[in-house]
Figure 1 (cartoon, helix red, strand yellow):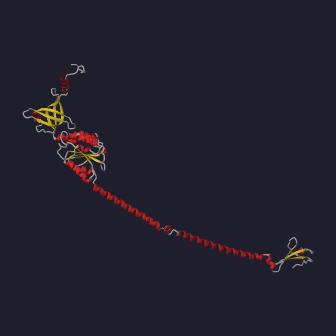
Figure 2: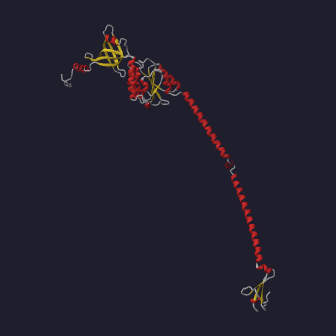
Figure 3: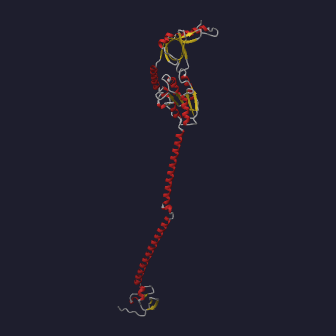
Length: 408
């Protein structure tokens, strides 16, 4: 047969099957880890058939082993158990199917599972999936809450009843999934992605009741932890009871100790909120009353001031001051005038005493020549001169007839 096929030279089915078998045969013997989804022990048959499922994906393979291999390696094996087996892939050309032929089967114990979980925990922590800084705050009052839980489970009843008791108008979108067994992880991841894509869902709760370590293993699966980390919507993990801490608790934004605790965290208590509102209203009322009383006291204080209590008092006081100043000015001016009048009278008296007119009143006269020269001696006049004689009252005109120069 040619190495390449074409429309003109196609390969027969047997050739295709042979080539597939050749490629699968190159893989050789391998160790495989998985979860037993189905175990079939046919009576009288030396061959045991198992369906091995991937814990994190919806994938499975058929495994065949002899009864002696199963009894020697895992005599108590049951469906849902984790196993590690040594097998070789085989291609059955007649049926066109792939299966694994195992020559050793080991059931994974609890101690080994816990050790694997511890290693996975360290790996996820190193990658930052547990970083508290990336955890988102829950909304105060979500529009709709997504709930991932088993159908008709106690966890579902606890979350719904407690949340509605706290906030009667709460809206839930419940997605029932398988929370235990081989199909649990793919079912939970699908529900998580569906709720995360719902624009109306503001927070997602994953709830499950308590159980053994093996029962809670799906919530420590690496694929589920990474799916929770990739969610845009805040996630609350409410798995098991208080001592149970699956790895998804570390990745989720909020860890609730129980489903009831998740209901208390996701919505506020209506009664508490009403009391808080009443308390806030009381504080506001007291603050307003205190403010009004304080402002009223300020107004009363302003109104009690003289400027507002007796607005004309200032004018009256100023009028009184003006009147007093005017009286003082009048008295000072009168005193000044009186004093000036006395000074004037005194000065006038002195002037009068010194005035020639006062001398004339005593009987004296002033003799002047026609040119106004005052005669002080008889020799200053000649006979025939016309003289002017000024008396205390009136004047006389005189002509000199004789002069007498006798000295007094």
